[in-house]
Image (cartoon, rainbow, N blue to C red; front, side, top):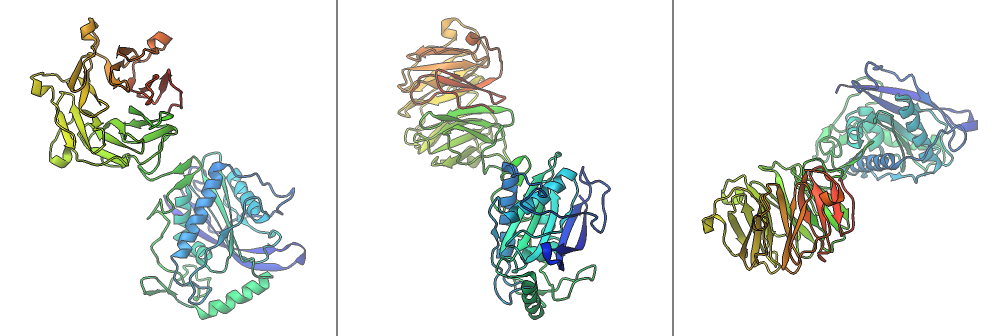
Length: 526
């Protein structure tokens, strides 16, 4: 994207005083955007004047995304200011942080109305006054547009004039307006005020006095840098650092979030994802059964009900898709495992090793089951091979029993962690350790090839099998509370089953993020 910088001087008309006051105002036009293609110019043809509050102030309270963007822009401004060891206004004093004026106040209404005008007209424009009551000294103002708050900060801090307004110690308060155009472009108006000055003249006099004492900028690294204004229109005393941008594109998540008109954007794996992109591969109950997690092949997680987000693997370079998720006994964490045997642990889930960490290369892992104390776990492959980690004891495998299969699709532990069941896509069940064999589909004379999961009852005296069509088969003391075919629902994308600790029913998850609750509360789908 090509960026074209333009600087404008404009005149403030302060109400009835009749004074014509010169202040610095800068705006920025980013070339190549869908709404501004070919609109480059070196001087602004647009200046907004309005009296806020009042009939001349087209103010609408910002929506949640606009408010979030405004707050994040303010946070980034103060990050930039906080890293400034010395500035061009207060000699040798760190730049104080500027407080964001409260929402709904005249200053904030003014900035918001100016941003809304820009968004509504898809055009950048400078605010030309008058100033709201109580804000006599305006130290500067910026206008910009971008796709998100990170882009706003980045483009402003790479512009001499904009950085001049942002890094100045003159303002004590900051009003920010944020508005989204119909096309999703974020427009920002920044107005900087010093409420401690009784008049514009008093503030400007102090500004000029301090400016004369500061004709160089000392960077945090100790070097002195002079920045020459390419237009040659500003005094040499106005010097700014050729600094690393603390909160711009060099650190897009400097505040932990990056707001756009579509909502907050988080670093990969740092926040839940909703809606969860397909394919969803697994579902797991929260600790108390009042919620559940969904995870997709990329390791992204969505949370529902009271499920607590602890982290996710999306954004990492995965060697295999995530195939299974398992919560800890107390619900304070979870593991995810990839088809390559890579393990990702979050919250109080312990890392006890992985297959890649052992130099074992596979691509057929189907699940991970923890021991009772969570200090170990087993992994099972599609061939029924089992790998034990931590305090997990080796309890046998299908190849070890001389059984040769390649259709194992799930593995679940017994409550005491001394055994496990495996299930094949044909509904065959294999019980190892103290896991009790309670039946299988081939044992009932049923011939299928679409079983995708198994889950035991809380007392380990039964288990459910689920098929990709949402058909459910109950064995032992597992209670049958329905199936999707029984409800007249016809799908073929069910991928997993989960139950709450009570075992009163079950959730079925589809690869599209759909969740079906049978005998249990429904907490939402993706």
